[in-house]
Amino acid sequence: MRKQKIIIVSLLIAFFTWMEVAQAASISTRVRILEGKVSKHDKKIKSEAAARQVYEKKVDGKLGVVDDLEKKVKKIMSEMHADKASKGDDKRYTYP
Image (cartoon, rainbow, N blue to C red; front, side, top):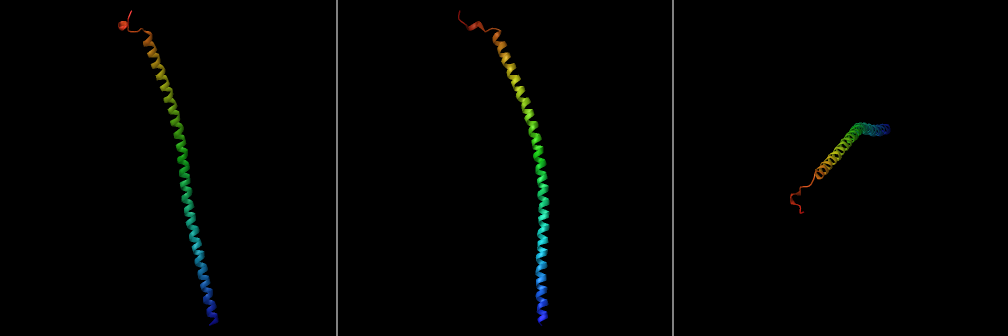
């Protein structure tokens, strides 16, 4: 009877120990799966950030071109205004 109790207690201890090992293995597997997902998302975020930086540089370059064109248009308009003013004023409504 005494040996039966020792065997039963030993089996219960082994069973509970085995359950803890199985739970730890399950947790370890879950952690590895989550780490894989996190690294996958991290790579995606880094690639999107790099693509965004390239796009921002391209947009900044195009905005510089637009600014240059705007300056040229303003210069041309001021030249046209100066030419118009230098051609002579309309003297119809001036007093002698």
